[in-house]
Image 1: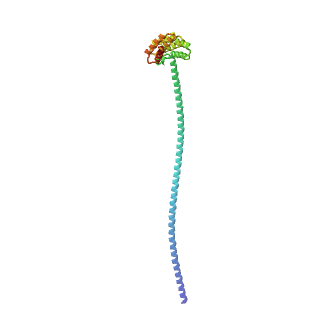
Image 2 (image 1 turned 90 degrees about the vertical axis):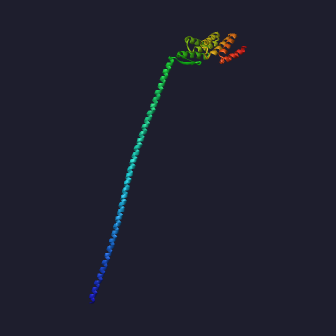
Image 3 (image 1 turned 30 degrees about the vertical axis):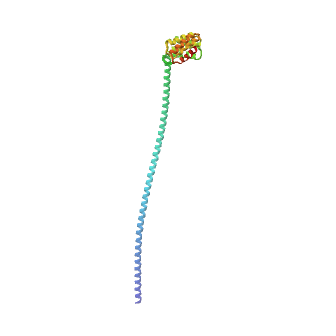
Length: 266
């Protein structure tokens, strides 16, 4: 009986122990199952974050690639633009050079044209009559006529009075209708006065007054006649001439000189 109880007790104990072990195993299994769900959720969440970061990294890489492409395209565009600018600069330099050459060519053409016109004018002046002005009088004279008059006057100015007298006498003979005639008569008379040909000088001064009484040198011619008369010791004639000068040309410088000489006569 005692053994039987004992046997039963052990069976009860084992049964109770087994039950406890079973209950413990069940609780452990439940706890392990709970921990696996949390881990899976953490893994899923972590995986999601990794995927999001990977996607963001991919987007950044794509943006960087696009930026690099844009930068490369911009650099290429800048290089093309720089090349175009250099090409334009070269073209501008070429055109500028052409323009400068054209300006030089134009200046050369204009210079040649000017030389040609001057040459033509010079040739025309040598053969065609032109307007001249002597002693305030303008008239038309042949080029040869003008040269001969200027040559005779140059001789007088050099003090070569005999040669000047011959040159002016020859000029008056060669060009009797010349506009230079009154002035040539005046300088012929002065050449004769210098050569002490007083009568010849008086004749040519009077010839000047006869053809051109209003000539700018007419008053000087009258005074020169008086001077010749004084040299010829014709003081009475000189006084008459000086009186005529003061009356005929009262505003002239020669009239002032005539008055001074008249005062000495008195």
